[in-house]
Length: 305
Image (tube, rainbow, N blue to C red; front, side, top):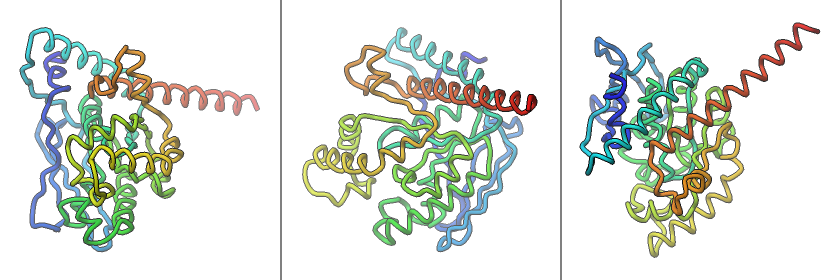
């Protein structure tokens, strides 16, 4: 049973929350995969202008439901199976220590927060949210780029903070945050109620990823003229200098450069999302273990005094 659930993790086509109702109505229907009765939770957002999101979380714990996608060869299937099974076992080791704490993934645009976040949510039986998508739904606009264009970046950031505030009141979530969420101290107040993980990807790799898929969905890049890779790398460099210290506030850091070096890869793009998710679990495990040890020492010292 466990093996069959693990098979599809790496190559599964991910489907986000489905909108229901009229555009701008603020209702999102979220499947609760963990309930045998297939119940659903409803997330309701308030007035789009004020963006005071009102969440109504259920007590659901998502059940892992992974689809099987045939790999090119038997060896690839076997390797993917092994990776996913190891990932699942690691998640079972980490889960008891999380106590329902939310996990917030931070990092630059294109760093894979949504992809890795969805994998983590599956193996941990958590629900997954993309904060950018929640802002889009709360405002009633189809994309972050359009929100920037129709309103302003400041308007988007205000809504983003409201969404993170509401998410902070919930439990058992993996949240992929927007690349710029780290620049506002108030957002850290909300995210620090959970466990923050920084996906640290080399700028060259990020620029190549973004150039390959285009910059239309990247409001901070789309207005720039010139070669996609060149303008992406230049903008990412500037953003990295601006946000680098903010990302470092995360309690756990997943360095893809270090991971690639350990595995003997010359390019971080050789790493799979499953590799990155596994490393994230190791970092989270290290953090919660260290935190538990510190609390235990404080408790013992308090009893002696």
